[in-house]
Amino acid sequence: MTSARPAPPIHATLADAATARLHEAILVGEFEGGAALRLTDLATSMGMSMMPVREAIRRLEALGLVEVIPHKGAWVRELTIEDAHDTHDMRMLLEITAIERAAARFTEEDAGRARAYLERNVRALELGDQAAARQAHTGYHFAMYAAAQSRWLLRALEPVWQNGERYRFAGTRSPGARERILREHEAILAACVAHDPAAAAAALREHITNAHARVIEKMTKQNDNGRPPG
Image: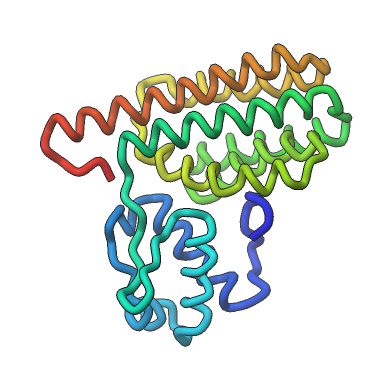
């Protein structure tokens, strides 16, 4: 995987399909942190051989979502408050750099792509299609970051983004959160359309900070109740 774009509806290979299915299962918590990923069981449940499943696990390891120990097996990486903070710090470093560069270079075509993903995200949320909403949310952010015109920046950002998505699903959703998040998305896009790097960075910084606060709030409550954070 070379960029964090939404998975296409038709997968080119069995490995692509296995990767998409395992990826979604990890993001939504179907496979929690520490869960063993057994090749035989996964291949049987997906109705395919172990080869594409093994390749899927390798790809997810490259994204930092899975840990593989030779001759012992594969596990989903644990969610921890320390890692959540580290992921947040790296998102700030990489995404703020990306949005500042993007805002200076933003075109009408970039705006159109980002707007289309944002509208798709809203529609999916209204329909309760969380998988489609997540894909559109990722598409929205990366449509803007792509305007930075830096292939290496996007490649560096992808594993951090994917790990952050696990924590985003672990966060709380207070009343009115959907509307606030939409306003944050609109503010980031408006700043890019206005070619204002400082405003785009400020809007994105607020967006990432608020998301991180929701994650830490929920994880702290779970730890206080004696439950694992994942």
